[in-house]
Length: 272
Image (cartoon, rainbow, N blue to C red; front, side):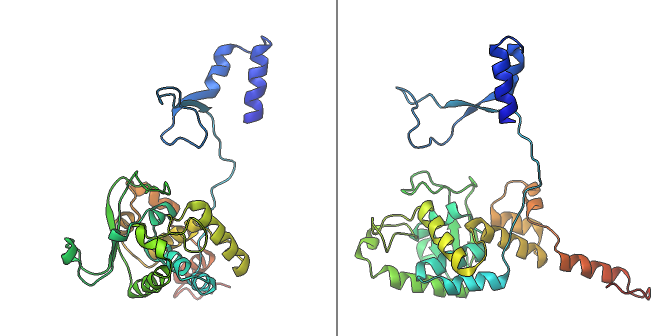
């Protein structure tokens, strides 16, 4: 489409194509987040750009998830307590990587009761809040505050991470959960590029793809396969629309085969 669009614009410059036709190729878009180096003008208001009006999908999007065994392997292969906790957090809660990197220490309510800090929610849980003042620019996709329950195993991994974090004195000054412990700036909020680099190293060691969003997708898929109500899964993931759930419920070969076996019960036929 890019090539066709540029050819039509060339044709318009030569007088072969009507200018009104090429005007249909793009549409204005208001930038919500300014990329590094972008000039917004003297008053900071020049945020409008042109983007392609026609976008066609040539294939269905592929949604990859990880098995429980693969996730356990990733946690075992991660050499640092911080990284093990991050992997387990994404897999257990279904948080997006931006939501995880944006967590503050005050969002971690991991005791049986959090009433002493003014929270009436029982059991260990994590609060996900959208904030715009995060030093690493990590942003929660959902505008609505939510909480996600966590397991005792995750609490144990967080305790291990806190012990590792306490060895770096600069980390005590940061209120962010995930901070740099092994490279400068020590104690600074962990960024997405650093996180991606960690997952890339882990993928090479594990021998299979492992990206943060795969853990988000894996959590959603696991809940739906286990029969968790769709409304509950929608709330855990922070989705505003139930239509968003369609991306996560896909059928694998084993489920399809099991369905055909059930269909022929009592008929004398057997699937192979």
